[in-house]
Length: 215
Image (tube, rainbow, N blue to C red):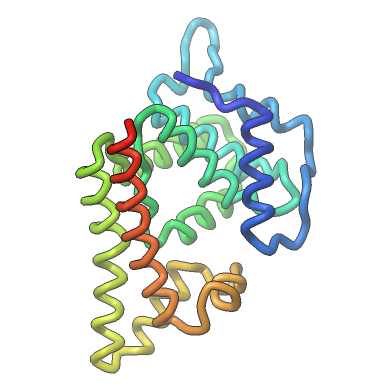
């Protein structure tokens, strides 16, 4: 399994800094970077706690999101780093429409007990495996299942005048109370956010198709 290096993690965070309007930029705790990238390969008395690719990816994601090594953008960096790590292993993570809500849930977890942390990592590993595929067809199916169809469902509700319910779901999925940039820069209203999710889903499937043809 290929490791994500310290330099690689820092490069991923720079991409996040360029793509999103973060309030603060840079590394808050430089010493944590090395610990984060090495922890998935920890061996304790000959035992490897994170013995599958999904557990290693989950350990990486938990470490970045909850470790707060960066001043800002830890959740987005953690998600992108996990996506890149799995892709390097030939596994494609289909980001669901409520992925922002999930990363906020991980970040909000305050457990410090080792057993509880390992339980959280196991839960993240299960979530990653549920939303991942190893083939283009499998990836397309999961993108449709977890992003495109839920978004289409909300558009249908909006067309039937159920705007309050749809907007409530959008605010919940995108955690707009914590991420105003989603509504201010990506869209002006719930309808546009939903349409963006569908557009992103189509682009994700097309990009994976192009990758398949070039490999």
